Length: 399
Ligand code: ADP
Figure 1 (spheres, rainbow, N blue to C red):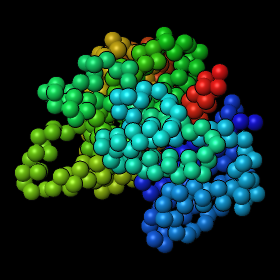
Figure 2: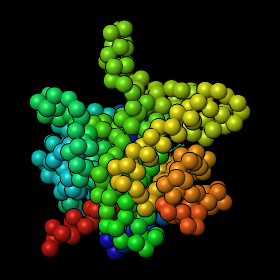
Figure 3: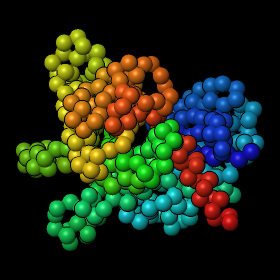
């Protein structure tokens, strides 16, 4: 039995899953949270013996991994007994150089830290977890799987910002795109579900979670995506503004708002939160239904923006075979899906209202019989994709 330990870490948390190769079964999973917060650390671990919760200080990521290993041992399934053959680390930003899953050595770990310049909220936490995990599991290969890698196939015209070329080159300013692990697995699963070769399909994927992005995929390759240099560009999100005139930033700076405050405003206090006071779409939806005008407007802004990109990607791809909804809102928001798809009948897109409204959690078609574009809901599974890419790399290195 072979398994992969998949690690998705932030600056103060480590999410982990042990996934069996082939079957994709979860052998264990858990979350270490509030790292470095005195008196607040917690490990929630679910293994073969159910869920356990342990509270206690976790000063850093090294202590976090020690706590994970201890949880496995104390719940009767030592981590060594699970047949782990690789550790797969999710890394948000791989810049222009990491275009595929990469075996982590000291140099790669250092580059991931240096790329924190482009992803200050994400890469430092990944780096800390990589260092700690390599110390705890020195005998295992560690693989970095990048959210940006899938989009490295974008043509230059899609990733170039129209600014001074030297300035762009000096500071690495270009569009990278994110959620690539999700866009990749979801587009592949859509093709499998339809029984059609991936390389024959033009697909538009809407990953609508707390973070949200859309991707135009031609024959399995990303050709355009809505996030840019950072995950701030594009769609309206839980707490991010998505597209905004860069001039608004200068305006705020000139009016005395500090750089860090503007950053926080646009990344952490905008989107649904900024427009309505609540992040979760379920609350926004309930408020809108109760007549709250701000919540109603927020949904209209959200849908309007997504429709902009849908129209844009129909142009980029010169039509589409599939439109795929995924992630929290994409999988659970039939109302949003209907609003986003409405009025696209002119290009052969027709939803089936009963299929769209059906309560179902699996991969499914929600367009009408005979709709020229097939619309699907495909649950995302980034951890399974990280496990798959990690084992594929390790196997190829062993050959
Ligand atoms: P993340 O980007 O954090 O991985 P998810 O993909 O899990 O986010 O999406 C989380 C969001 O999905 C929630 O904030 C909520 O707005 C939305 N969501 C989750 N479940 C539902 C549901 N049943 N109905 C509507 N929206 C939902």
